[in-house]
Length: 137
Image 1 (cartoon, rainbow, N blue to C red):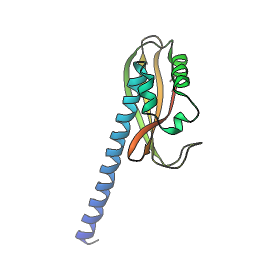
Image 2 (cartoon, helix red, strand yellow):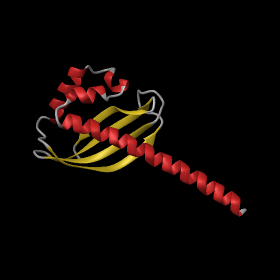
Image 3 (spheres, one colour):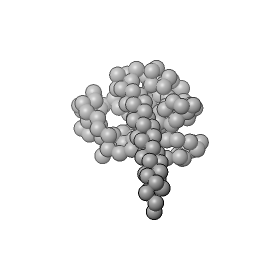
Image 4 (cartoon, one colour):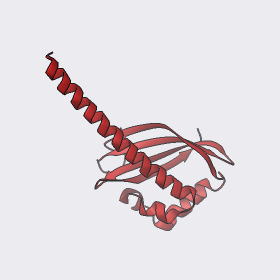
């Protein structure tokens, strides 16, 4: 393979991977800001930064009640570590688009470690959380 062609291909691949990492960083920042809002009981802020995909089946009050019900016995968050991130272009029951599914291992004062899955969706250049799920590891 000619040297110049190898250089062009390498440059193109690096450009694509840099863009993917930038998107992952931005999506993770959105996910962590959303999680911080619910950790602090600021459900209005979480609601405002949520995707219409999440808002459609839940009112702001329902989101607050659901999260409070699920997490009420967990206690305060003591740690959170990202385990994986997966880029997707489709999700069950949601429109096609850019999604990044983050799985975090989160420590809670009263219930030990749990897995949290947060999925931001790219909408008009802004990452917004479209789903949240918490489970025992």
